[in-house]
Length: 93
Image (cartoon, rainbow, N blue to C red; front, side, top):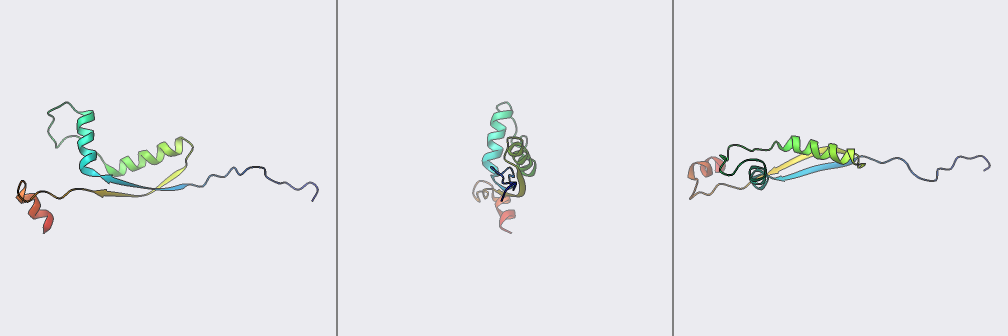
């Protein structure tokens, strides 16, 4: 067909769906070690998992990989019943 417009390359990049899985205890420990002085109380240095997911989606998008954050899943360990009996009791109730 003469004069038909035939695209030579696709220019549309679909948004990727992004789900972030967080191992919270390891993330908290790494953040505490990386960004706070040694000996800082563990109550300091917490990370907001939703903000982390939004940051990752924004960075991917800024680097040419359009992404939409569709979920954040947070996993943590269970307190030891011998070392932290009160916390373990709360977690198992």
